[in-house]
Image (tube, rainbow, N blue to C red; front, side, top):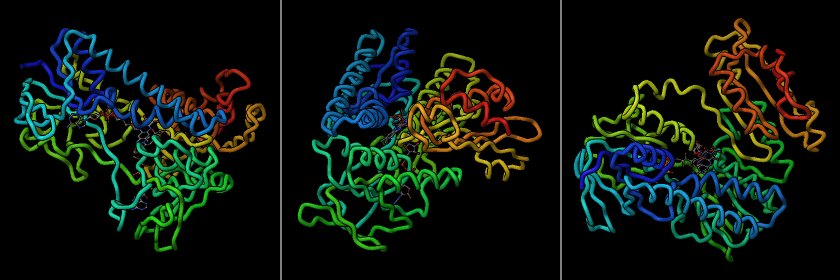
Length: 439
Ligand SMILES: Cc1cc2nc3c(=O)[nH]c(=O)nc-3n(C[C@H](O)[C@H](O)[C@H](O)COP(=O)(O)OP(=O)(O)OC[C@H]3O[C@@H](n4cnc5c(N)ncnc54)[C@H](O)[C@@H]3O)c2cc1C
Ligand SMILES: NC(=O)c1ccc[n+]([C@@H]2O[C@H](COP(=O)([O-])OP(=O)(O)OC[C@H]3O[C@@H](n4cnc5c(N)ncnc54)[C@H](O)[C@@H]3O)[C@@H](O)[C@H]2O)c1
């Protein structure tokens, strides 16, 4: 069977491309290896389930209630994603593993057997990333060790948990389990949490987590894990720790295993990600890669923007690139959330900017009284000479929404003075910008 385009992986970019190109009348094949993953990681195993659990915990629901609602949300979104493409007459969904035969030919596998072979002039790889398990003695044979996906399928809340890692994924689960009443111990290689972020904010997050009862064992190397009386016991260079369960959140790696990329002339970079140019073209001239599999920032909205770039290559002027998509904001959904866009003050100084800094503790924002939550601090980085906004790091309630305002300001050259003098509704966290940008 020949198609105009084959998409490997039903992730964020893949789904949008298949739907849009199918709508344009192109003959599209989309290949997904698991029916449980229609719509990709974000809705099935990552963003949506984790944020649903967090929202439920915030409402004071039990773990069981939270997990039950999360399952309903995931099922509904998975079904909706499948339906959207299944109802498109120009899109064929294949539930198989894909493997390249050459740069225009893809095998559809069931186990080791080739069930069919399909061809297309253009192919998009959107196979995402998967959790990495570190090599620790005993990790494969010890029970009650979970990755982020697995920990969200537990029936009962563990009374105690060890979290290995303190990156963005780990921090969200640390916060979640702490809110649910689990005793949390964090074991991490690095010396500080949020090491790449503004130092004061990293400290504020750490202090709030310690205040909530979370225990950190930082700068630590895990040596060995085992089970003892139904618990997980971890031996480290700073002592031995024990809990009912352990979550391993030590990073993710691009999903390229089994694709036989060498058959298509698609090269990987030194981190194992598919090598792409700024139009997302791989080293094979007719094959694109989108989303986590190409490395860089791993966010669902980046995968969605990758869809725009590839679509623009296939149907538009080819002007959108990874270089002109603008500032990329992000939120770590801890309680309260931490969000960032652009540079920190120290990064801006290193780049030669004369910096003016806004620094506003949340306790000075009127809205905090209404919410009865004084935790957090908002920081802004402004170029002293030009009034240009260079970045913002916001730790506090509603930062996941506010950061998008700053992103628009950065992308469209809206100055710090403009945000300072803007009229905002009251009482909101947004009105903090009247003070934050008064630098
Ligand atoms: C716990 C967690 C929470 C997260 N929270 C957020 C968040 O709040 N906000 C955010 O923006 N990002 C978040 N992320 C990151 C986000 O999930 C990813 O960036 C996003 O899902 C990447 O999508 P993608 O398009 O690259 O592909 P994916 O959604 O990963 O889809 C790839 C698909 O390809 C399939 N596949 C793989 N290999 C093959 C093959 N050989 N043949 C056929 N099919 C194959 C897979 O089954 C999968 O369905 C989170 C990640 C994790 C782990
Ligand atoms: N809210 C969001 O948008 C969101 C949420 C979760 C993840 N993500 C995406 O997923 C990506 C991956 O995040 P991540 O947190 O999984 O990875 P990461 O690479 O950001 O963090 C890994 C952490 O594990 C630690 N570590 C590594 N090996 C270790 C070992 N053997 N022992 C102890 N500690 C060890 C590291 O010190 C680090 O703190 C992020 O870059 C982000 O883009 C996004």
